[in-house]
Length: 255
Image 1 (spheres, rainbow, N blue to C red):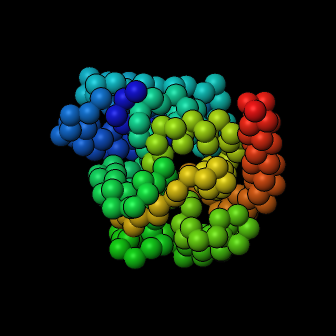
Image 2: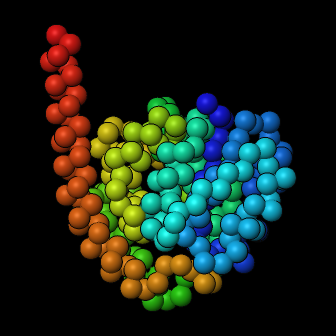
């Protein structure tokens, strides 16, 4: 198993992903890790794949996974997290809104926990976070409303579920993402709800984040995502119930 897998979902990111890959290449070059970078192209119509391929000489291992068409960010992240073999698996956004160096901040916070967290998430809603460039007013308002709904329905106590900067241990990644089915923007909610339901400790850590123009999230996506949250609540409850029943059956068979 490798030390670290970095997963980047990408859709039409030819103009922006180079900056992200530059920062990751510099970050990894400073460390002696058995690492890999996995870019999951979600059916891009531009030169995203060609740009990523041109960076291969700068990495120990850079893999490009291609989807035949645009299937959604959730699908891309799931594919990358299940392909990765790292003991730690970080997924981050292709637009570099949270720099890869925030990984050190997450791991330092995790090391101080009495119980090692299996999931560590970047957040801009807890003390110590920095929003270097804020979202436009309407987008920020929709985001706050969405977060309140998510907390009320599915994830009470987690202040920021939607930041695209999360680390899972290899075991947690395999257990969670093989149960995930959401392909849309609300996939984070499903992954975190499953992680919590399976008993994994989730730690929320402040990060520095900045809004990037040309976001792939359109205002209408918030409404769609919130509808998906309600469906996710039902699906997660069913999956966890089925998992508990299987564990109970296995325990009975072993007696």
